[in-house]
Image (cartoon, rainbow, N blue to C red; front, side, top):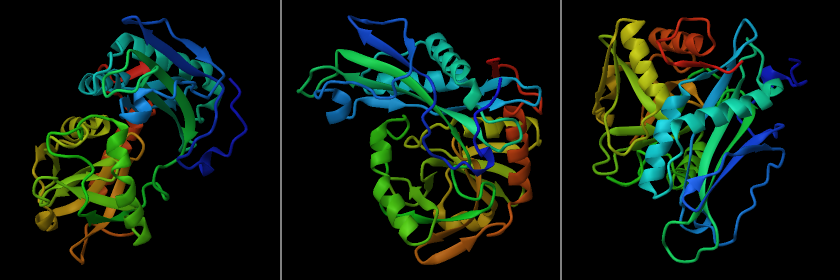
Length: 340
């Protein structure tokens, strides 16, 4: 298939309207069959619970072009299961895993010309979401919902791709202890906007969130998960009930163990002990891996491997995971879904 005439290598992480998107409606206790549409405007009631009470959730995943001209998805079943947990937490009907994956497949096939070519450094980003709609005014779950998916071609989330960037800790919290931090709802991101703005104003890529209970342990890196490499080559990542369980992070843990023969541990990572780490990074669907050059905390700046060069272990992790996603390295069973 002939691709769109786009300078793929120059893409940032932004919205571009593509040809088709998917909508399915929940009414009278069930989802309809869903359909593709050219309309990128969502038409909802002014009383929709998603507008007033934040009754919504979303996901993010990518489609990749392979060297042989195919297109594939990376672990969409995990995104489907995570969205189900989000829906349950904010009292919305779950989307069956099979329906979620089928809808993703439909959207990618319908927008195949927008999937960046192999080797371009860009990918097709999919944004599934569920929102409460209908004529409502009281604080209660809606009786109607939309499950939608749109897609857009994207480049690196942070400018520079695999070039290390710096972060600063914040006193603000993105989520409360035992709150909604472990599900993917918009309220968590609304809570992060001011912290990100303040970090960027000081010249940093984003902020580091500490645990909301004690502010002594690393929770998340802006909109991504944190990981570190210890001086004895262990992969460590925060264990916390208030962070989003990243599919990229759980995949990196398995890559570290099965491909690089490293020990991978979820544990508490104290901000005052980051000098025990020789490398650090942010990971997530959008960023994949972004190396962390240094972290500013309490007016003290700690540099990991380098502010200008990615660490060797982080580079191996990235190359292996990205190679799996692009179809160049054999994936663990069940990770790859062929679209075409």
